[in-house]
Each structure stands twice: as C-alpha cells, then as structure tokens.
Length: 81
Image 1: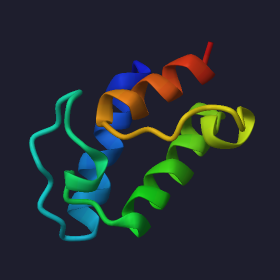
Image 2: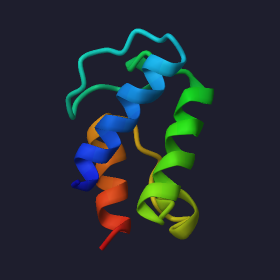
Image 3: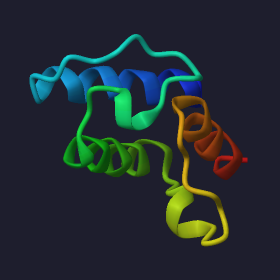
Image 4: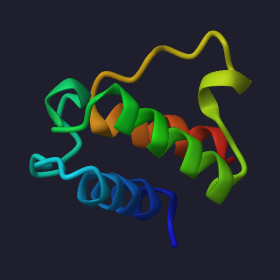
C-alpha cells in the first residue's frame, strides 16, 4: 500500500472508530476542518508510525507543521524516502 493510501485509510478508520464525520478527503482539505479532533490526529500519527516506521514530526524538527491533508501526506512521503 502506498504512503498516501495508508494515510487516507487511517483517517477513515480513526474517524469511524471515534464516530466522527469525516470531510471529503482531498489534498486541499485543512486538517482542522477534516472532522478529526486533536486526539484523533494523534491516533493517526501513532498508527502511521507503527505502520510506516517513521514519524516525520520527530525526525525533522525543522519541518513545517502540515496545514492541509496534502501537506500531511507529503510529510510522510518525504520521511519515508
């Protein structure tokens, strides 16, 4: 599974598990408008670290904080290289 597909899968899975209404997922979607709260996003990050064996937010302290879903996915794609 690609990094993009895994990120999207985790967003959907966490939203379902936490009974959240997930906005349509596209690259321009602002994370704060995704329907996931900060706890849900933390769960997504933790699961992605387990699945992809990378956490782009601790490996590169100079990395900008992602604002959109596209930024979030790109953070993981860049860290996985």
